[in-house]
Length: 159
Image (cartoon, rainbow, N blue to C red; front, side, top):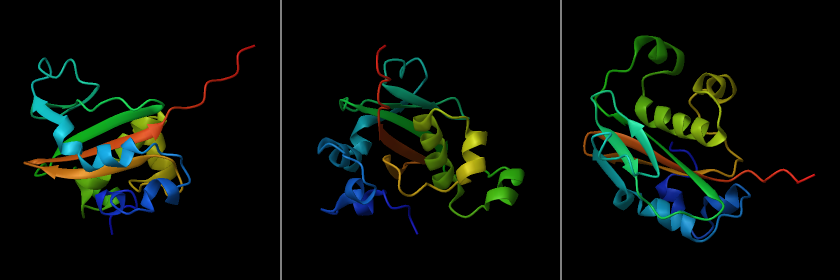
């Protein structure tokens, strides 16, 4: 079963933002629904001006070119859909739908600003329920890409 914030639920009027208790501004679900329009694939040099990028093992780079949403951060992760799953990771997390789960976990870790190994300890490759992050996992051409958005952390009060 796909995680609660994938596209099938984005189109719902109740939407994942309400389900997760966040205050997602109106553009966030629409931005995720149109995510493929904001992704480009090319060389790392060609993607240098992207808002955020993900580097692939074959030398390509995926860049995010979506409009900024005030108060929200974006992260992406991409993998080749036909890449072999490393045996140690398959033993630990299972091989079924591995790259979709992997890219969601990587995007979540990036949004939380934690190393992926720490994310694994707390969540495995599962997407945690109850958070404010929203995401969409896409299968484009030969790639699996997850785009995630999360509210920016509140600034600490000034002394």
